[in-house]
Every structure is written in structure tokens, then in C-alpha cells.
Image 1 (cartoon, one colour):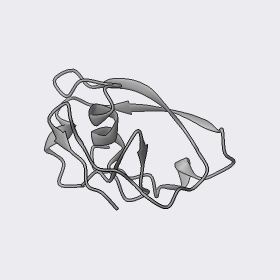
Image 2 (cartoon, one colour):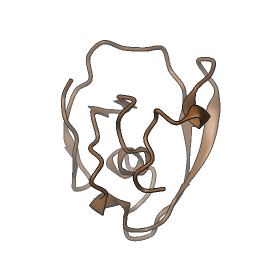
Image 3 (tube, one colour):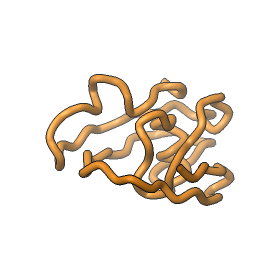
Length: 88
């Protein structure tokens, strides 16, 4: 789960589709990277993106909702909640 990315079939579909995601605690240690801030690139770790965005805490894990958006061309990197996201 911690290494799952937005490339999974679950995250495909119409703009506005929402998906409830569960992440166990400790996903900040995942080797997968995070690209973007608030809107994340498809190769980003879903759970690390949730931690970065403040939706869940690494020490607790938990559930949050992902909403599909229109594609964007630029992803801004930042450091939030001890997760460093990359720019693309």
C-alpha cells in the first residue's frame, strides 16, 4: 500500500471521481517519491502524498479522499510534513 502510485487502475476515470484511500502508519519511509504539491504527478506515492498534504499523519496512518482533476503541465515541489516533494 505504501508504494502504490496514482498510476493504479483505481485512480483512472472521469475528472471529479473520488476514491477513499487507506494507508497504514509508516508510509513516509516508502522509497517512492512524491512529485507536486496539492496536485500530484501520477508516479507519486499515494500515501506519501497524503502525508505531504496533511490528510493523514505518518505515525497514525488513516483514510483520506482523493479527487481526480484535469491534467496539469507543471508540478510544484515543496517540503511539507517532513515529506520533500519534487518539481516537474
